[in-house]
Length: 251
Image 1 (cartoon, rainbow, N blue to C red):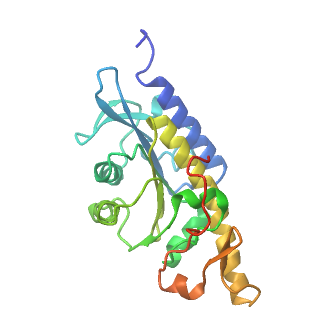
Image 2: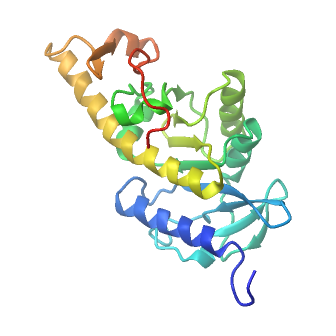
Image 3: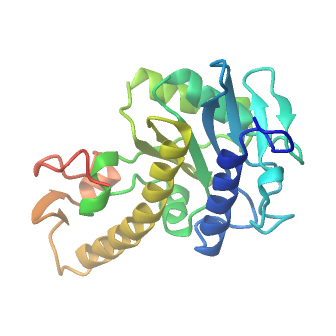
């Protein structure tokens, strides 16, 4: 590292820019959210690049690279960065431990997805751009920042052998997006893309639900195929398009 430069400066600057974008697009709110990704130094030692606590309420999403934290996994030692570690580091670590393929974890309070999470309903996944995340379930409620929530998420990922990338709804709390990648920066950008496109999908799913209630359509439709209906939604039957092939490499 050149003298006078911050460690992981590029990675931290990139995450600071992502925070600003997510906040400006109203894909989280001042109640919070937290984002992280994994990286390694030249010796191969692993670190977590993570947003500090109060990134939204205190700083309104306006963070500098210096405020992004470099964290040592499991010891939770802050190696560099101005600020304190969010209590939800426990959930991020639980996700990384549950599946080593996961390189980025993004938790946000996106409003349209929050509607589904707070309703206790799975999110019908209908748009072409979002099919790579497949089934989007809502998990039972556990308090935010709790060890119970971290264990719930970890157990679900491991027990159900959930493929990546995936998105989970945290009941009354928000969305959790977990992504793979060649490196952490690639993975966090995938997570950002999923957050944005799933917000559009959540609005579309809501409107298709209303249209069914009005009798205008007879189910949820994706790429010209009926993939479920309101009864399936009530019974937590996965609603996504597993019938029409999609390009797994599509962005």
